[in-house]
Length: 391
Image (cartoon, rainbow, N blue to C red; front, side, top):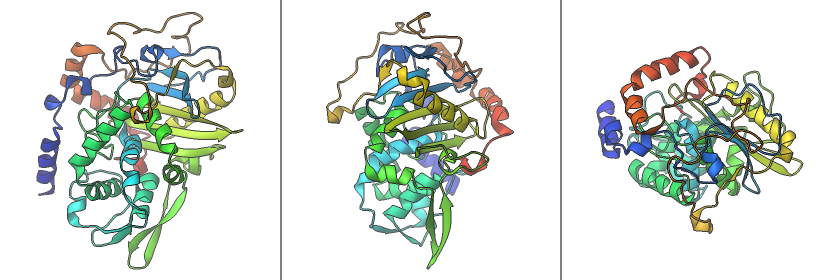
């Protein structure tokens, strides 16, 4: 019954690849220039600074100044990739302000019936009454898809929440993002980009509650009756888990992992009054690699990146007066220009997992999806992190 109801819901949401718009399943192209033309180019984008980390394997990454919105360096900023649980930042941007934190809710079986099998869970149980505050702790600390689904049902249902998230993404001008489920779990056509994820983080951090949740290291979570159990944030740069040290000045934001997406992470750190945002998507190896590459980019940003000239900008939401960005005509700005302007350099961390570009590439991508997925799983299987699985 559970599998049947999930298929029914997926059908209602249009989750089959055949039903998705081509743009939803296609990697970013030069037609997308939100934030500046250079961000639509292939290759590393960098001006006025040197010394980027040499061993970056991520398929896409971006470094930005939180206050000014200036993009200091990027690599395939608009490449559309599976976001995993980093999409929960958009969920929070959309739903966080709707319910008072002290509001209580008694969870039912129906609230959890459509949580995908294999999801990361915080341990929400039917019949237990939770505060909204506790549910958000489950979302941010443990990346709990169960908590996301309960809040989504409180919000009027999965389909309504997905539609509102897509509308929010449009308002934020996060046009690389296609939302299929609110939890970030793997679904055909569910994509975002390093640029969009950084937009979600920057927008979220303007909200005090968002900032407080993503920076919380541990919390006590209800287990029924008067019993509780401790949950710990899965952001390893925040907590210093799994052999990593806590990163100096780390304030969040959100990590994610699935067997298809591999590891994704958007992090924010503050030093000497300056806050940087870094998003890293799909490094070649699993485990701690996404955190190590984020740490290296943060170190660069606080040091040599201080002299970097902006190669683009994080645009403001349309609802807050942000100017609507005009897309670059297809075919322009597709490659990074060599030389002093920048952009494709010997530091380019090209990845063998590069997605195919264009309409023809989309057909090949869909047809060869099973083969590519097997290769991707094989690449990350040895080091993948089960505590983040399904996030």
